[in-house]
Amino acid sequence: MAMSFEWPWQYRFPPFFTLQPNVDTRQKQLAAWCSLVLSFCRLHKQSSMTVMEAQESPLFNNVKLQRKLPVESIQIVLEELRKKGNLEWLDKNKSSFLIMWRRPEEWGKLIYQWVSRSGQNNSVFTLYELTSGEDTEGEEGSRFVGVS
Amino acid sequence: TRKKIWTTGSDNIKFDAGTLLLSTHRLIWRDQKNHECCMAIPLAQIVFIEEQAAGIGKSAKIVVHLHPAPPNKEPGPFQNSKNSYIKLSFKEHGQIEFYRRLSEEMTQRRWENIPVSQSLQTNRGSQPGRVRAVGIVGIERKLEEKRKETDKNISEAKEMVELSKSIANKIKEKQGDITEDETIRFKSYLLSMGIANPVTRETYGSGTQYHMQLAKQLAGILQAPLEERGGIMSLTEVYCLVNRARGMELLSPEDLVNACKMLRVFDSGVMVIELQSHKEEEMVASALETVSEKGSLTSEEFAKLVGMSVLLAKERLLLAEKMGHLCRDDSVEGLRFYPNLFMTQS
Picture 1 (cartoon, each protein chain N blue to C red):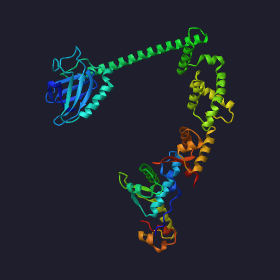
Picture 2: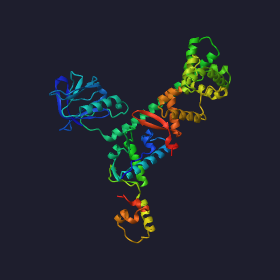
Picture 3: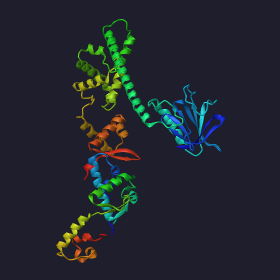
Picture 4: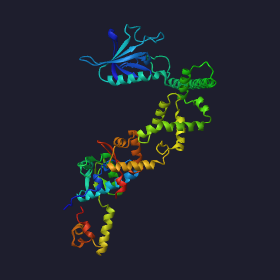
């Protein structure tokens, strides 16, 4: 059950699709792109993509506005994500990538917290138990549901 | 290197299956089988070159037209020929590239700058050691020539300055031998060289006073044009306008700048020739207001709205962008400026 995706206001702002020359403005712009990519991928349950797909995806291509982010700028956005730890390249040519809308260490932290709270330290869990167990419902553990 | 035939005109005296080499100084042909057989033509001998396209049964050719042979020419394959050109035939390929490179060498004429050993060696390769030494000596020789030339120019310039000074003095002392027309012409000539007009300067005493007077004059001349242009003009626009208005005693760029610095003393509040940047913030803020009202604007739209030249309009918008008040949308539709919502909106 995917909610209809709500685009952020930037998505309807034409300058969003032009890499800004002013450094401070660019910083804000890139931050907005990064969070858009992550929430888009999270909602569409997309964990990996190729750059070609990305170019044509509604994510970077707003057909209604008639604006698309040029591929060089897409590369810059992806590089930002990689630096933040949310992206990993799957090949040397940087043609496809893995998107981690929650970074591995964030997951680790969450899991540890949940395990501590439910007093189940030092026992072994399967991924199945973690993602679908009754224990996990209704708690922060429900965040684990839907994780691939 | 390419495979060619070297022929001389319709005598059809051919040299087959060779390799053509191009250096900065010569065109060299060498027999593929017998490397000892080798001939060369100095590029300086070439008048011009033309291409002959390939046809059915005919290969592409370059025709090289030559100057008549100099008397001290080294012996070559023939004593003489009735033709003044040679044809290079490219049986396999390479004509286009070779033509291009040969044309380049003909244009650059590098053989004129870099002397090499004089003899055209037909059968032996050049001795590398000797050529190198000649090369360096040649370069040194060239440097020495250039130095002499510069010295000559400097001494000539000194002469000219002396001459101008003496004529300027004559004008000042109103010695009868110079006509009015010549005077005017000469004064503008001096100004164009950047030598200050001695007459006007002295009439008004010290330099500063002169500039003050000038500033007053400018204020008068520029009032109307400024209003037409939305209150701002670039200094070059002012320079052109003012000199056109003055007609005769033209202003040097230097004088204009100095006069403008004086202008704030006479600032009537209506006229603004801005050289300082303290009014920049104001202009940028007003630009932002205008853009916000309209949602977004291109340089042309902004220029039209405010009544400014497109060049200045663009400068102002770019300044606003630099200061973070505007951002840009660059697409096939053109370059538009928007209020910088990235900063103002959460």
